[in-house]
Amino acid sequence: MGKPGIVVVGSINADLVVTLERHPRPGETVLGRSMAVLPGGKGANQAVAAARLGADVLMIGAVGSDAYADTALSALTAAGVDLSSLERTDGGTGVAVVEVSDDGENTIVVLPGANAEMTPGIVAASAAVIGDASVVVVQGELPAAATEAAVRAATGRVIVNLAPVIAVDPEALLRADPLVVNEHEGALVLARLGAGEASGHTAVVEALLGCGFPSVVMTLGAAGALVSDGGPVRAVPAPRVTPVDTTGAGDAFVGALAARLGAGAPLEDAVRFAVRVGSYAVQHAGAQPSYPTLDDALPTAPAGGLLGAG
Ligand code: RIB
Image (cartoon, rainbow, N blue to C red; front, side, top):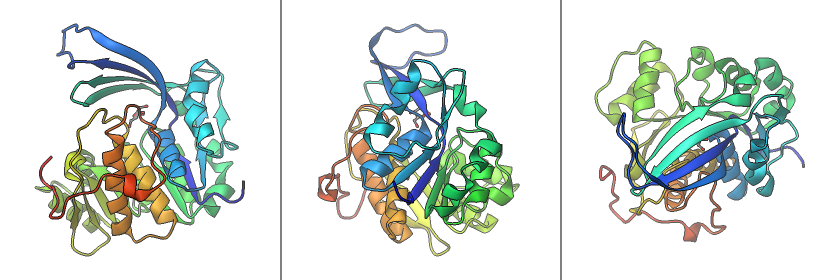
């Protein structure tokens, strides 16, 4: 494989997916309906999405030496993601226990396993390939020091999807272009940067821009996304779809965003595409669905949009 356009530095998991009618309350036992072991991890989900949408992708991450490693890597391999920089540890692969209820909502508990063993040194060993990438993608499921090493090695565009919000050094964090967060993560980032509170989604995006991020994307689930690269905050509505499984929808969004930015699209165009891909993803089970090869097969937001409907 030649130089990858996109390098994803992030988590690789096996998802133990239980479907159930509704989520139990604390202290309650409910009966599940089915169980499956599927590939997951936010980083891997993003890499698979970007690759299946046509990008050349290299993934930097770690799996263990257990039986879950093969499952965790299965879709990455099938999607043609370059795994030549993969780290293999002696311990267990990252595992996520995912519960998906009939309304498509999920709860997730992650046991980091090999992901927690990603060090700045392991990442720095791939500094050349990271530096060659036009887009580098990181999330919040690796140790902060490893994520910072990836950002520092990048010379191209850096997408930071701070999910979950971890204590990344502000100087590295502010390289994010864009920072991709949901409303809760956006508020947490503001607090971590000592920028206080902002009321309302648009105000949070504006406050994040005020902290020094060159661009910010806020995902709003069924309501779409907000985007700004310094100008007015623009709303991107989502298509109306019936969710089957929301697991990994945000990752599909980020993978699609990376694919389009890597292909040279302007940020707002890339966000419009990513919203459609995220809407497609929630209609399919698992965190690494196949994606249609034609944009026309993705759901489309009706004229006038649905922002605020979710
Ligand atoms: O975002 C969804 C992902 O979060 C799952 O695939 C799970 O592995 C956790 O990392």
